[in-house]
Image (cartoon, rainbow, N blue to C red; front, side, top):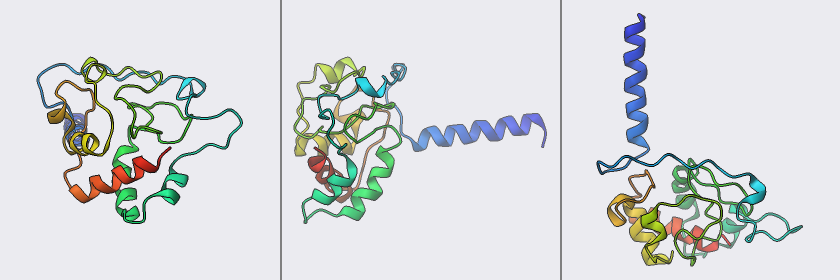
Length: 167
């Protein structure tokens, strides 16, 4: 394979990968992804010193019986690309989502939230999460979450059930 063909194949692959991960749907230049802070500085208020770490395992055990755990696990695979979920774990490209349900938007520690999210006044309740997760760029234009959304209503419902139990 010639170098030119190889470059074309790699370029097309990168375009498809970027499209699959979503992306900003406006013409503004996206801000660079924040650098994750060391684990000891992230979400320390959520994890008691000396207490066993809490996270996804416990959340799945404590999910409401009416929630679809299998669908939540499947949907969560998309989220795990950018987010951590266990107490005390570092932020990744996106913030750690442990304890997010019921919290004010942009309230997590050591993460460079977009100005529009910091100034939104949103609280992550069931209704707000449902609307945001369906289409983040449309719900809150200018936010930095480069993800097209969870279009399936049942998948969103299951994911929100998991986030409720993640405390």
